[in-house]
Image 1 (cartoon, rainbow, N blue to C red):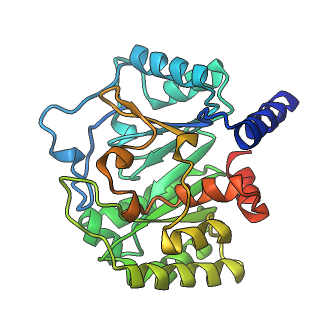
Image 2 (image 1 turned 60 degrees about the horizontal axis):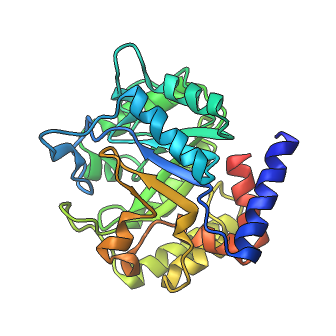
Length: 298
């Protein structure tokens, strides 16, 4: 990592922690509402006229995010691998972000299409359980295609993200074990279903969440490749802490800009996005959380 980037991160952190400056460091940019699956936890696929950003619109949003202080961008959908604007593909957006000065650019994919040759610094694949558990959420045949495309990818920084819900919560441990045995996957990140509107309610109980988090913490301490920090997981166990979600700037495919749409929906008490716990743990100087963030981003 460049010295100038380290200096930027240090000054950003000191400004936020000591001076109260609220400038986003990360941007989640939803480039499209188009998707090729009909997952139970999502309503994007049902939109009759999905929003799709053009290349120039993405450029404008990246410029805005950069001007706000963001230096890490995550391209999401819909499904990023079906995004098109003429001859432009998602690799062109990643190259654009690098050229504009972003420190890293990642993509999140459902892995139903090949993504070998991705220019992303990090690839996130949505894996909602081992085998049948994944397919309970995402449909028949999705797990086999996911396995095939992960195996063919060859990217050195490929991680998976599991959203725990009422269909797969009992399969968390087996999924973590599967990740450790798969040489193509570097680590797994655990999140929980958040009750956004217009999707099936898949939320687990508070007791089930505590049970899952206790299992994940135990496996993390046993050396399993889990991206979440223990400090961040402990905060999410009870979900009662001061949030710093302004660290992430969300930009949606319809160009809406927000810290997190869950804030205005009033569903923070049921939030399952473990990023919230990780950000708070960073601000309270938890070494394991800072180390986890450095491993992911740097």
